[in-house]
Length: 110
Image (cartoon, rainbow, N blue to C red; front, side, top):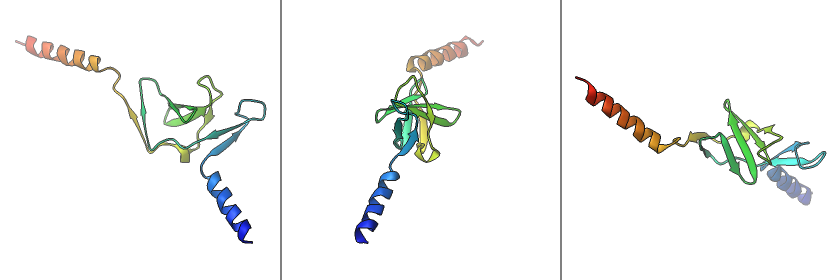
């Protein structure tokens, strides 16, 4: 009885660590496991993120994951989503160019 309880607890804790999506693995009938994303994800110019040997794509406030950047893509369950998504600046030089342009325009005024 004690072994059954311990086994059940161990299996239950392992199942909460990942999601298994049938049919999304490498071969026919394969299995793909989607780990949790970190609490904060910082995306670069493109909305792709690579973490723990999985590719993630963020679009329209939804996350998709795959073992390859080419797909096939599966929707990530919401409990696996990060708490926060941040975006890097596209190009700091663009910010400087914009600031310089605005200064020039302001100085041109009569």
